Length: 205
Image 1: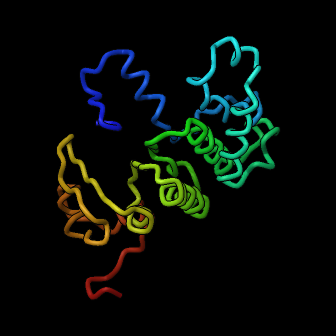
Image 2: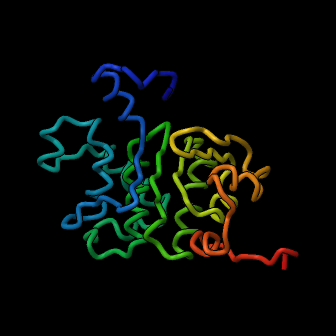
């Protein structure tokens, strides 16, 4: 269900309408590298303008303003007229977030948004997503495999294993037993290192 609309079995017209309200953030950024940052963000407005306008680059002033506001919200408005290929990975992901914001969505889906970023940049991007959720009230669903980031930034954890719902609840109540249940096995020191956490000894040191 998205905004009260059942997605499974919906008509093509209904799906188009629902998708226009869903902002998507990709692991690999999915930017058009040969064009500018602001043009990439304007792609989030495609459902709002006739195809001939977007093809010719004749975007209405309100769409250009929405793109700049979105870039300002993620802190890279000064990069608006830089080619996307000249940005760092973290900056490219912020452009991806701005593109999703430009849609003015009611739901944001982020698929492994920090998987290809370093730890510091990952926290900056996760902070952007949390701030968007809190300040704009946009439901934000983030697919993550990093336990430390989930604990630090999430409010609710949904755990799936083999397509089956294992856990759905407050992140503050999650402990190592919860993760063992989700993953179907004990969490090893190697797992913790892979997920960005420091393993502890049995006595907690």
